[in-house]
Image (cartoon, rainbow, N blue to C red; front, side, top):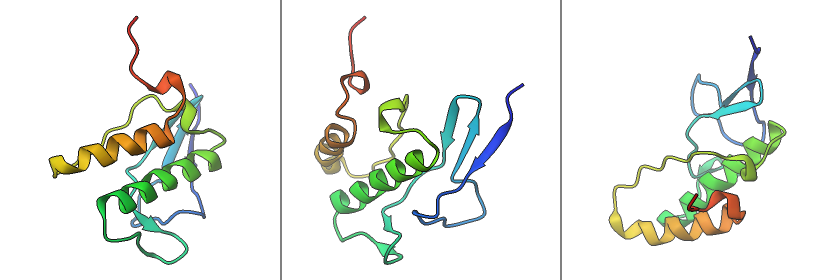
Length: 107
């Protein structure tokens, strides 16, 4: 059975007593990320786009610190309460998941 390894990044904020990520074998399970800039310790801007971009940036840094990257992401779950934000969210998916493998494909 693979060993469970706790991944902790010093580059992104940790807001509570939870693991930022857990590696089990070749899989990495990542906790939800928020739009807080680690350098300032504050929310990254007033807009949905600025905060969501920071959350995606935090995710990328966490994966890098776990010796992985955005190109290995299999699933992303986003909770969005404002339907107007979906255009911005789609823009971020294109920006952060530019790899064709991350886009929907027909098999």
